[in-house]
Length: 210
Image 1 (cartoon, rainbow, N blue to C red):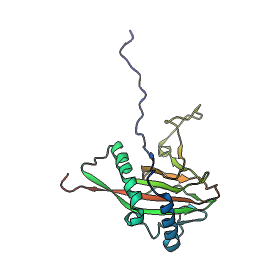
Image 2: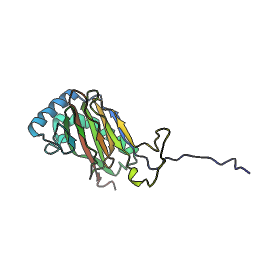
Image 3: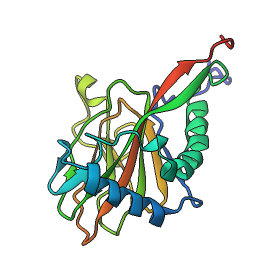
Image 4: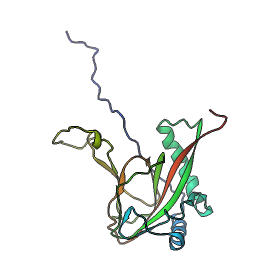
C-alpha cells in the first residue's frame, strides 16, 4: 500500500547569505571628494588590486571614526544589524562595531583579486562611484573544495550548483557578506574610476546583558 501521508521535500542545507541594499540618503559626491583627498594624502598601493589603483587600507583604515564619514556609517549600521539579525545573531547580548573602514579607487583596467577577510565577522562594499561596466563583485562558492564528485553536466544553474554569484555595482549600493566568503571583482572596463568604501565588523559581548 502507498502511504497517502508521505511527502517529498527538497531541503536547502547550509545556505550562505549576502545582503544588498541601497542607501539613498548618503551624499556620495561629498564622500568622493573626501576619499580623493585622503587618497592623495594617505593612500597607496593595495596588494589585492591588480592594475592601477590607490587605497587607504595601508594608512587611513579608520574612516568610520572621521566626521565626514559619519552620515555613511549612520546609514549603514541599521542595514548591518538587519543582516546580522536575519542570520540569527543574538543582538540582545552582543554589540556589533566597525573594526576598520577604508577606501579604494580603481582606475580603468584594474580588478580586485580573489580573497577573504580574516579575523572579521561581516565585511562590506559600498559603491560611492560606479560607472557602467566598472566590474561586478563576484562571490565564489565555498563548497568546491569539499566536493569529491559532481555531475559532469548541468542543464541549468540553480542554487544547488552555482559556482559564483555576481552583484552589480550601483552608486549608493551596500553589499554585506560573511567575511569568510571568497570574493573578487571583474575588470573595470569603464572609462571612469570605481570608488568603494569597505569595512569589517567585529562583535563585543555586551556587559550586563549576558
